[in-house]
Amino acid sequence: MNTRTHSIRGLGWRHRDLPSHIFVGLVVLVTFFPLYFMLITSVKSTSQMRHYFLVPVTPVYWNNYVVAFRQLMRYFLNTAIVAGVSVPGIILLSAFTAFVFARFAFPGKAVLFYAIISLLMVPSVLTLVPAFVWIKNLGLLNTYWALIFPYMAGGQVFGIYLLRGYFATIPNELFDSAKVDGANIFQVFARIALPLAKPMLSVIGIVNLLSTWNDYIWPLVTLQENSMRTLTIGLRYFQGQFQTNYGPLFAGYVLGSLPLFILFMVAMRPFMSGLTAGAVKM
Image 1 (cartoon, rainbow, N blue to C red):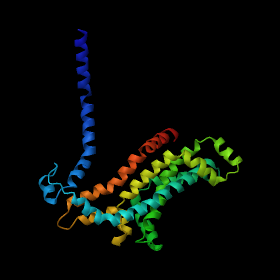
Image 2 (image 1 turned 180 degrees about the horizontal axis):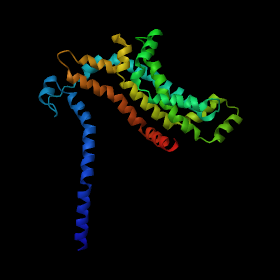
Image 3 (image 1 turned 90 degrees about the horizontal axis):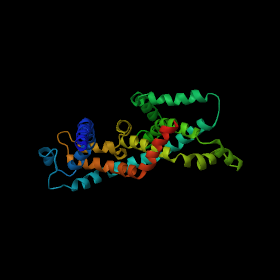
Image 4 (image 1 turned 30 degrees about the vertical axis):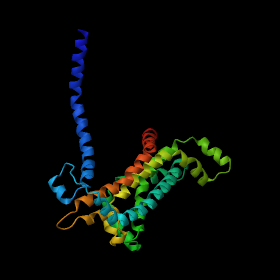
């Protein structure tokens, strides 16, 4: 009798959990289907893509990756240069600014901080034309700096917001002891504040790397020379007026996503630690 009762209860729980299981399954399907479609299409010919849209098919065209890499190699390099300068600059400048806001008192501190944070509510499209005019007047069109300067200026706001609260929670005794030992503000910042904030810095770095790597509109507006364009613009050249080379195009998507995927897998632990620290300390 008890066994039958337990089995009925277990069946009831399974029926009760069925909607949640279906919902989770749908979320997983919607999340991973684009990745599946990108991978199978990257090794198809255009004809295979049209006739076997959703299923893998043979023969496999690995040459699509060779074609994509040769076509996109220059754009990869441009994107890596821009991201390699922008992201460390964002991390360093936002960290030092947040450190000043957290550890020092000066007139207008609160007003200035909230004025900076309010920029998070300004849509980027509203600053597109003013930023373009500014870059043009400085003579920076068709240069890496046309991307680097705006990325560094815009990316700092989120970093300042996260790090200011984090630095404020560090005990004053650590900084006081460093000052007693003769350390100046830059040494205190580099030797104490930055090492303690590594998880938060990884969050800021990954978030800004994603936005920099995947940006399309701003490079399209400011870079007219083909040799200077970034990866997101370069992928467009697989799309013709009358025909699109889907295999090399999707192979380019895979190659473009691979560095970000590898970086996230390597930095996943500090990234998750930073998210947890930010949730607790803000």
